[in-house]
Image 1: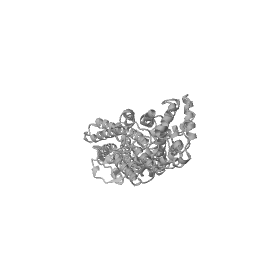
Image 2 (image 1 turned 60 degrees about the vertical axis):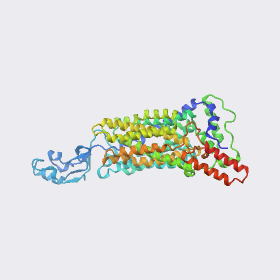
Image 3 (image 1 turned 45 degrees about the horizontal axis):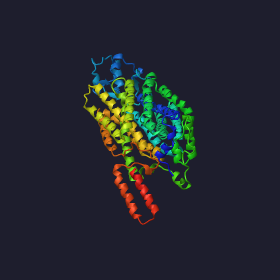
Image 4 (image 1 turned 90 degrees about the vertical axis):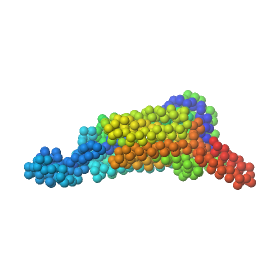
Amino acid sequence: MKMQGSDYDDRTVFLGEWGPFQQIVFFLLCCSIIPNGFTGLSIVFMGDTPSHHCHIPAHYNITVQWRNVSIPWEEHGGTIRLSRCTRHRLDLVKSYSDQGYEPWTDVNVSEIEQELCTDGWEYDRQQYTSTIVTEWDLVCADDWKTPMTSSIFFCGVLTGSFVSGQMSDRFGRKMVLFSTMAIQTIFTLIQVFSPSWLWFCAFYFVVGMGQISNYVAAFILGMEILSPSIRVLFGTLGVCLFFALGYMLLPLAAYLIRDWRMLQLALTLPGFLYVPLWWFIPESPRWLLSQGRVQEAEAIVRDAARRNGVAAPEVIFERTQPGNQAEKMQSHNICDLVRTDNIRCITIVLCLVWTTLSIGYFALSLNTANLHGDSYLNCFLSAAIELPAYTIAWLMYRYWPRRMCLFSTLFQGGVVLLLIHLIPQNMIGIAITLEMLGKFGVTAAFAIVYAVTAELYPTVLRNTALGACSMASRVGSISAPYFIYLGNFYQSLPYILMGTLSVLSGLLSLLLPESLGMPLPDSINHMQTIPCCKRSERSKTYNFTSVKGDEDHSDETMVDSTISGLKQ
């Protein structure tokens, strides 16, 4: 018979809560998350656009006075700056220079016709030696390529979410974790040698596939191996703090290395340090049991008992009865996430919440280079605010109902973002503070929704469900760069949209079933029921009972067990 989550926890209680085995698994899985913190967000610096203007070739041989007025001035965001995409017609400027005319004295410069930057651009090299923008001139008519670069990365994340979840449920958590870590590291290294923007984006797509896949696999592996109390610590604090640590290392590395290729190389090298972890991180015993591989699961648990210095019972897990082997080996796929009314409602609500959180988190993270002040400091603050956010999320998750945790953080983040457009433009400090508080709420909610999703879905679908929710959220992350782009038309529009979506998603999260204190389900029948589906699910069950009322007692027993499962 199939083992429920509470049965597994009861059978492995002899291992203890926090022995050497759990400590090693906890720490190593958290360490595997660090590269994800700087890989996905490195585009903040590698793709930043420094100040620039049209290049004036030296062969035009114009006087210094005329060279200084060759670039017109323009207004942008309430300030006056040199035009970034136009210049005065150089043939006319050279003619005036050759004739000895003085700008503004003999010629009204503002009346000279303008032209596009046909000879390239000159970039301010004070902050960056090079970025992908300066190397491939992703400005003016090609400025759409900058947000597109981030969107292509998130398209890779979307693809990885779709593929890795089902692969992990079929081939195992450990195999997918290490194979996708290898993909991420190797293709990030190849990306250093990109000859063009198209090749950079192609490699970035594959990096995105690997990045989300190893994150989800590591998260699920820890949730299934660790004991219940440590599971909460791992899901809401452990992996998140180590992700934030990687994120905080990004502005430090970018500050020290101003060339995008060298920065990318420096961020790649730590990935090779994770190869030895293969011999220290085990496969998930829960997943092995769900596949009918009882002996392998017992071997892992017995090894854990040996490391913890405790004696294991003679029989840990009962062998699967032959009659139930087909049920135990039944394969599941993404279609099971919408097979019943209950699981369909849960999936839809969670996908909407994940999408909103992805928009808010990545839009606010990618926007740090556009904030007033030092971009390195702003990025560090955006990363540092995640530390208290994850800590608060962990404390809330320990004591509060899951729905209230998710609702309160989403609602707080949304309300704060809505307040930004009420702040006068000259009060920059207050606006940045509110944006960081909005990032605080969205980050805490993101940490909570991972753990909530893992608790609501059964073992046979858990990684597929997390992958599917993550896949749905990538619709948000793909569009996040363009939320920032909307600020060019109305500065507060991104905050109004993100705040409204966060508040609405917070209200929607109240529809989810409560999982506080409940064991992890191992089959679809063990899932909690969403409140709005309870009545319909029960009516279907009782209707089935009335139709089959004349059949034998074994059928009645099956229906009774179904009703009992719905009441859990």
